[in-house]
Image 1 (cartoon, rainbow, N blue to C red):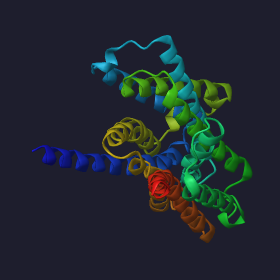
Image 2 (image 1 turned 30 degrees about the horizontal axis):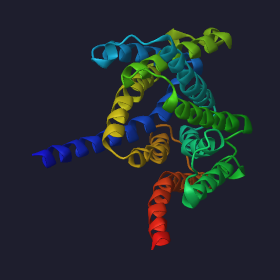
Image 3 (image 1 turned 180 degrees about the vertical axis):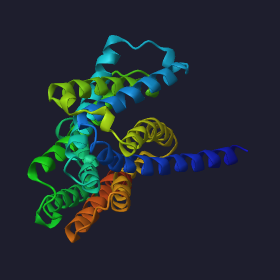
Length: 315
């Protein structure tokens, strides 16, 4: 009986991970559709404000979510929201005004590489091993190729820098969130992060003059559908499935979303937005995907190798 329940949970967890693969991969396409008619910072801010409010209400229905967050927990959630949503997601939304969604997704796929580098430099964490560092090198080579002439000239230096900064901010926010004093309820913490990031993005949009560019009467069905998809699919359903998968599957398995998402984004960009693929883009996609795969598996391989070396030394 216990084995059957464990097997069922494993299957449900994998189903949840597949949802994350598609949902988070499709957000890049949805962002590109939405920012055609809604200024990027106002669009992203509204998305996270709506999703955060809904999630906070849902969290309040759970036992852990009824806990009133302390000032330090609110501050930590605001910092995480500023790094992940205001900074990282805001830059992606802005960059997708000019950068094809699949190409943007490939640049953001480098987040695990930056997490490894920041972990070693800032937190003095153990390195990812030879395999992991090889993955970092391959991933960065893919980024260089993507930003080079082989990309078809569609990735201008300013937007390439914005996307690289976005991935760095996401990596920094993710690392900070691991040790920050956040609410015990994951749903409540995520809701506070979305609310803080959403308010910050709305303020940034107002400060940069986006209110003058917003014409609600001209927003068509496609942009509205994309916005709804980002709120429900990307923020609510995608996050919930991610949390469940993370609690039920090995971290290295869940981390595979980082190199599946861009593949989904590329396919959807081709099918829905008619984005073509150049040989340079295809080669860059291969390098980044392989690099992140090695980066994800590198630490696990290094841990397995250490006990084996210890046994040899003892023998």
